[in-house]
Length: 105
Image 1 (cartoon, helix red, strand yellow):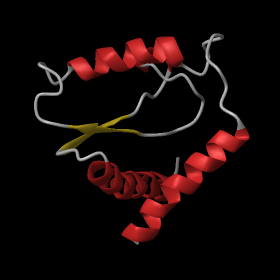
Image 2 (cartoon, rainbow, N blue to C red):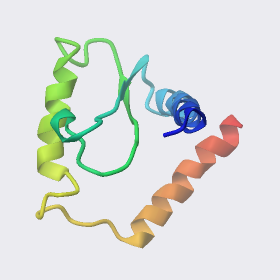
Image 3 (cartoon, rainbow, N blue to C red):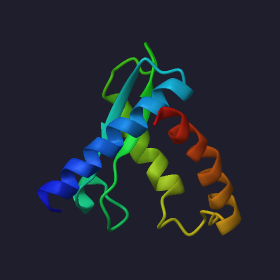
Image 4 (spheres, rainbow, N blue to C red):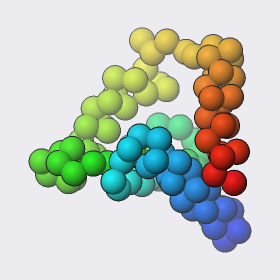
């Protein structure tokens, strides 16, 4: 990624994070990136996981990463048992989410 692309990625993550924090009534956020297979990357593109957090949600703050790894094994894009989402489902979700970004400017 170019410096400009990296900057855009984190600027977007920050803006999306504000909406996630507000809409999920979180008090904090965790941002996670897996870069490479040994880091848990399951799709061949850059993206940021934005996870809403609240006080006491995990006894040990870093336990979230083990749970993310377990969840990815169960529902990851490479899991044959995972039901693919329809274009209609994704379009409806995008429409629902877009309202939050129109509000936030």
